[in-house]
Image (tube, rainbow, N blue to C red; front, top):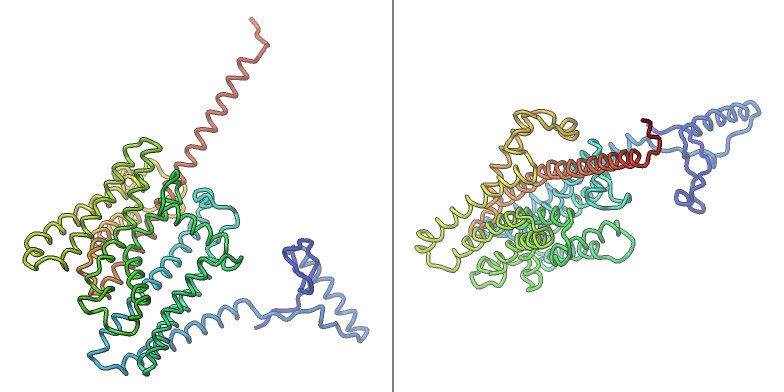
Length: 471
């Protein structure tokens, strides 16, 4: 149940030790030799009747036991949150219950979706590592970037903090502590914002700086577009509904409307008629559109213009949907809704085509049916045709449901919207596998071509410089 006696050897690196701390074993061979020597010393001391000093030994708990204990605590915490939340909701009246859950969901569902994205990104990094894909080179980050374990550690803390705050919000409101309940989402948002922009060397400062710098480059594409820029911008397009809910949440906090139902009124500044909702929804697509235009300015590639056209097809979907709150019902049903459906179909099919032919480079499914150009990652990670059928089929279906979350007039179905947004994040998660694979193939092929050209030029130079010509 606990680990055995452990001896230690001195480590020269100052980064592994601090003054007064335990020394660390740096070599497994040295560890084995030290254990043998220490065992002999114990036997000699026992024969002499001398007990071994406690300072030279350490009783460490088993890592497996610690892991099981953490898992047990996690399940106990999850059960406690569910039980307290259920009891708190049942204390409310039936008329108030649905309205209040709708409001509570507004504050916490964006952070829950962000947490899910962090979990998925850790899975992406783990698969890239297993497949020997140098994603650090692709994203142009240093070797001190976060590993998948550190990403999962951050996701674990987010998984604990966000539901805990939501449980406290429900409990306090149901027990009449409205002011304390209203402070819960405010404190959570403020703490997360401070952790993200903190200038101190805590909470992975280099990674936070890289993210903020990339975010700044996305918002203001005034420089050459790099792969991390448009990769993160594509992820932002899948999280447009998250940004919209964040805007509404912050709006209610600023106007002190938390823990009230004032936002259901038609004239509410943060309500359903707010023009900020479609504007925030369309911003990620505008950012990506400007990136494509900047890329065309730098490279003069026509594909950048076609890519910009793809992102522009999302604009009619968003604004035609928002017109429902600003036109007569008959005009919406007879004129604007058919246009909205047509623009939704166009956006879905165009995006689906671009995913397959451009982002993944499937070349009209030749790699699916013939596998005439297998790659290392395809053989290691996928290797079966059914995986490609699954990805293509699921991508088509989720691309069609994607327009649902972009439609402002459908946002009252908050549980359905949460599910569809979660599925869109899952689609983006599996999209990242093939997109990074395609980029890695391009980089390796380019390196191989450059290497072969270098070898050819060196051989030609040897032949030209050779002075031994025998006739």
